[in-house]
Image 1 (cartoon, helix red, strand yellow):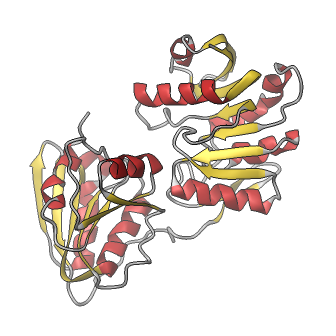
Image 2 (cartoon, one colour):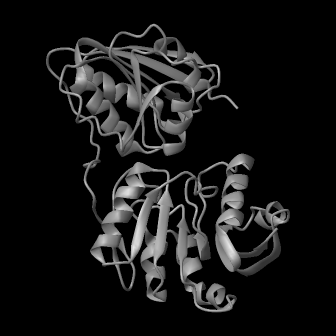
Image 3 (cartoon, helix red, strand yellow):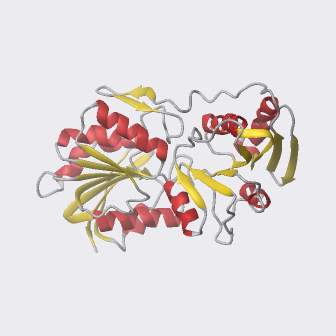
Length: 345
């Protein structure tokens, strides 16, 4: 699979001036994209960073924190826009800050992602631009840093964790950059509503719980009432920071671990809870589904139970058939369904 908007950036990632920053968020890293020693990749996605490092790139995992780069220290920034507006605005603002006078921001994206608006706002900040529609709905802009900034873009205080939503019992801290950052996800709430049904399928109360793909930690906070230690894991740097804040806020016995689909976690769990990121705006990717199911089969202890919540149209049961002997759809609510997985093959 290729991303046409990302393809527009390839020429700017080779023969790049020293230093160049490549801001990579949900971009595809092609196997033939050879590393350039002048380029440092920065991503909030641990899987992208791991893939880049395997190919020889210099790559850092963080929540697009460019504070280690002083103002005027960077020659070029290359960025294919993200899905979330505050994050895009944050990256454009930071690009202006770190670029030296005459330094370049190369920006690309799709019309359906709002790229034309981003290009216009970046032009107001930088004061000049070369903007072109390259192919189909894909656009690219080249912005050159001048002495004085124009209008900074509203990033909704991207860096700051803040209370963003609550339910009847808890207030949750989160921030832009976390999927569903300012609301309680309906699917996750549906899973917690039926949590005792999953627990009842266990031979005894769980002694270890895994929150696989924890986001800001809603499932971890709500499952803490079971009294078992919890491992919460995600590959997104903003999610890890938010989950750690919520665990600390409520004194929960939980370890928050950066990992992609449970990679690197070796202990096994009596109960695994998962609201995987292949619904509500994410394309269903066979590889991602397989990775979550494979991780669950590997990490579930004998006699353990996994509780998944997915969009009701996703055929998780069929995909899980080769990995689990026990597969039950426990409930549906018109939008989501709860699937119990047990007895890994």
